[in-house]
Length: 116
Image (cartoon, rainbow, N blue to C red; front, side, top):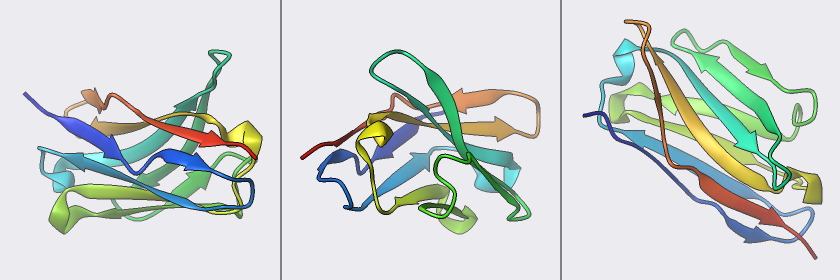
C-alpha cells in the first residue's frame, strides 16, 4: 500500500514562510505529476501547483510568484515553498501523485494557518 505523508504545516503570521514536504513510499520516477492542492476552511478545493517528471510547473494565479513547487525523485520527496503567506492561504494542503499507470495517490494533508 502506497503511503503519502505531508508535513511542514503550522501557524504563521502574514508575510511569513513555510515549507511543506511530501514523502511517499513509491518510486518518484514512476510519478508523472506531483501536485499540491488545498481545501479552505469553507470547503473550497483549489489546485495550488503541479510539477511534471520533466520539471515543468504550473501555478494557480493566486500563488504564482510566492510559492515554489519542486521534487527530488532520488528521495521520493516533493516540496512546496510558500513565501509571503496571506490569511487567504489558510487551508489544509494535500499532496497528490499521478502514477504512470493512471492511478493517483493522496496524503492526509497538512494544516496551514496564516493569521496575525
